[in-house]
Each structure stands twice: as C-alpha cells, then as structure tokens.
Amino acid sequence: MKLFFKKGLILLVFIFASFFSAAQMEKKFSIGISTDYGFGKDFNNCASTLKLHYHLFEEFRISPSFSYYYNKENVKMNVFSFNFHYLFPDLIPQIFPVLKNQGLCFYPVVGFCVANISNPRKSCSDCSSISATSGANYMYHFGFDFGAGIDYDLPTLLPFLRDMSASFEVQYQAAEKYARPLLLFGIMYNF
Image 1 (cartoon, rainbow, N blue to C red):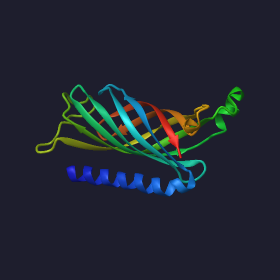
Image 2 (tube, rainbow, N blue to C red; image 1 turned 135 degrees about the vertical axis):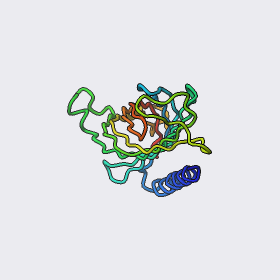
Image 3 (tube, rainbow, N blue to C red; image 1 turned 180 degrees about the vertical axis):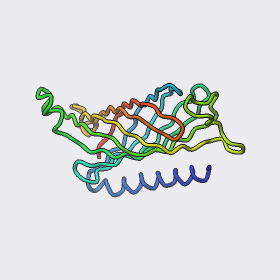
Image 4 (cartoon, rainbow, N blue to C red; image 1 turned 90 degrees about the horizontal axis):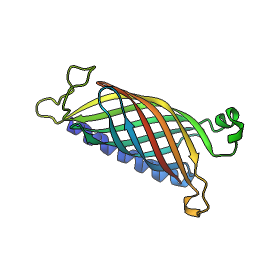
C-alpha cells in the first residue's frame, strides 16, 4: 500500500506540472489553498488543501487536490481528490438580479478521492474496523465526492491581486469505510 501511495503522489505531482506548463500559455489555470472542515458521526477534523483548477473548456474544469487533515483524536488522514466542475456564471444573476456583475459563479462538484487514514483510536460506527492491518500504518479508502460551490472574483485596487478569487464549497465525501459532509473555504490565484 505504501507503494500505491507513493505512485499516487508522483502521479499527482506530474498532473500538477503538466497542467501548469500547458495552462500558462492559455490563461486557464488557477492554483490555491483552502481550509476544510469534515464533520459527521464518525469523526471531525480540519484540513489544509492545495488545489488546482484547469479549464478544459470555457465552462468545464478539472480540480485535482491534496488535503492534509490535522491529527485529531489520534486519527491521521490525507486525501487525494480529483473533481470535475461545470460552471454556471449566469445562474446566480438570473436568480438574484441584484448580484449582476458581482463576479459570482455557481458550479456543481463531482469526482473521486483516495483517503489515507492511520491510527484511529476507535472504529467508526458504520464499519467493523478501520484499524491498520499488521505491518501497515495506513489504510487506503476509495470514494466519491459530490456537492456544489461558488466562486467570487475578489474586487481590489491592487494590480497583483486582481486575478484572485475566493471559493466556498459544500461536499459530501462517501469513501469505502466512512461518509461525511465537508465545508471548504479557499483562495485561488488565476493565471
């Protein structure tokens, strides 16, 4: 399983590098950070996330990310996610005309994730055991993400901050051995 994790990390770095080099020429690339909070009946914890947005088409983008969840209740966790967003830039102004030309964009989120969990103090309520197998510290859980988000182009008078946006997402992460909602607050820099 450690080999799987290392290969996944190398693949993610390769994807980030490929998108960065290709997207800089086309101005379709964003990179940013977010603070995430996962909560549910099994366990709650906060994370720091590095994420990338790459526009394949005008309204369609992919968003790979890596989240490091802070150790809480002796649960160590990190998650690789690969999500898809379809952008609806005109939806919010159509519903709320007062928000026209405010830089708001709604998008649904769907994708998959691989969660890497280690050393839980107790097993979760829906599974018999998520404790590590003998000889391994981490358990890998494949899952799916789905939800919705809003991007907001930040207004500023400073030239170097003109390409920044804030995002808020609500997701539900359904992995092999756990399922829980997530709240994500992020800042993106758009190239």
